[in-house]
Length: 300
Image (cartoon, rainbow, N blue to C red; front, side, top):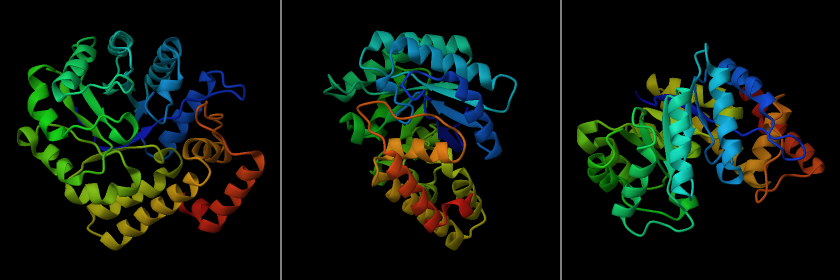
């Protein structure tokens, strides 16, 4: 099992009052299908997992699996949490539901101080789903946990028999190359920074997990196609479109602005939850105008 191609990091849909709004999941899935996206990464950073209750995370995973059943869409469930017992329980549920794979962030409040402690945390979580591929989700910019991931891949398999690889959201492209070659290339290492995707592809990436794939799927599909065809000029053009888009959204607070773009596109995933903020109605109008000026709607 490999996470190759484009894996979309799904937003968690909320109603205007912030309550979970699972009725929108089917519409999200239809939007992904229209854009050729066949794997969804549910309940991760883009999915605001740390702002959800344990029960909400269970409901979210169940709904995505239900909606995907009988379609081409496959579901990877993020199960990481600061409480390892909760993470292990979510892993067990994901396996029972039939998830394609599970992934887990490092605990980020009480942080593991050593690589050995991090591996022990991952082993505890993965043991809750002993028949499901496990990915460690490396994103040190958010968790503050930053160990050399090629060392993780060298040591972790002895403790985690289901280890499939790493969701690598990390700027260290030297270590990324070492990860791609760890264990004679046996591990799957999808890349997780959208605006650097082309660099990762040039180094050997086969897959990517991205937040902006939600609303920019066609951009990244063209980027992949151009790279595979050896048309680097076209691939660079699509990558720069990605950079311009992400740079614009960051001006308004990325997650809230990204969800506003989804609403503009007709898939109302609601607002972001606190502590993330959201653009005002006036700012959304301004954002819409700036997207038009950028040419965004012509890129889709």
